[in-house]
Length: 128
Image 1: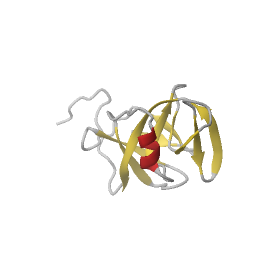
Image 2 (image 1 turned 60 degrees about the vertical axis):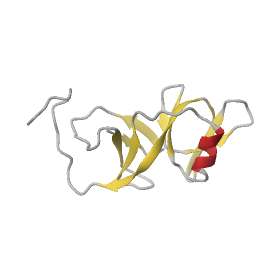
Image 3 (image 1 turned 135 degrees about the horizontal axis):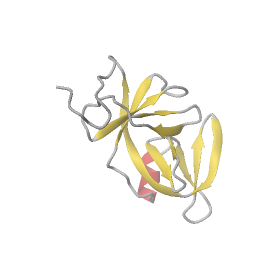
Image 4 (image 1 turned 90 degrees about the horizontal axis):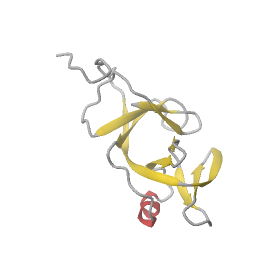
């Protein structure tokens, strides 16, 4: 779990919320585009940045982008003229220029929370 902040930065957080389908995780979109929904992504699918990723995303923001400085963003990736550097673009926010990408993770989709997610003790204990 975690959340997307006002500037589209991803803030990961350990939580006691249970998420169905353990291979997928959710980020609460609190403000901005898609607010009120959960962004679903695949935790273990950390992909290397490539031309294929650039082509696959098109003009959309289909990937979470983790930088070598440890921050993670939900933005469109644009190539930079400099080798192995990229720009992170958002329609309504300032562009983040010349960043090094450690990995990207594909966004699987969005869901609206119909019910509060059940909770469990942090650390994975079984409450059944």
